[in-house]
Image (cartoon, chains in turn green, red):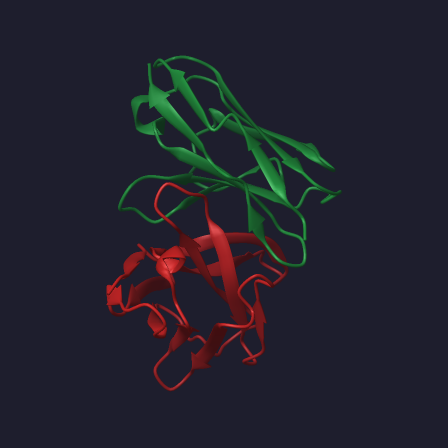
Amino acid sequence: DIQMTQSPSSVSASVGDRVTITCRASQDISTWLAWYQLKPGKAPNLLIHGASKLQSGVPSRFSGSGSGTEFTLTISSLQPEDFATYFCQQGNIFPAFGGGTKVEIK
Amino acid sequence: QVQLQESGPGLVKPSQTLSLICSVSGGSISSGSYYWNWIRQPAGKGLEWVGRVYTNGDPDYNPSLKSRVTIALDTSKNQFSLRLSSVTAADTAVYYCAKNYYDSSGYSLRAFNIWGQGTMVTVSS
């Protein structure tokens, strides 16, 4: 099984800050990596697929990069609606998620 | 646009079987070649892929849950189901159904772009 290690588990930031979240795969997954935003009581929202492809309707302040085993989600200028929990997901044979990163207000 | 909605008991006793339904609207579950998934999130923990069923009815399960999980299509009702047997408190979670994301050629992008709102299931006596 491919394990996903996500860091940090939480980050405190202010509106306007740049936030970077990292995900590491236990083996090469090429660019089969997606990022999601979760808010309580709402359906998860796909932000990025294919490691760097921005999902339609997602603001351009979100970006993804990486390939192989190292991946990054960056929020270039944090907005109030971005305070949420973020998960990475590998799309190999059987999907698996990272542990999540909670972005909190500083 | 396809929409998903989970339903089922919110409380299940230990050792019993958890049963959930995902109702699909805005499209036929039996058209195309798609994966329909169950994913869960225990309180305070990360997301865990439970398993999926293909349009032809073939399932795949998370190896860690395989001995207890059954996922099946019901094309007559346009829904798919999850059954998890011998539940314990560790199975307490929000359960989501989700559809794989496909490009215009029908190729799976190996992500989930359509999700239900989730349903909370508590395992307790």
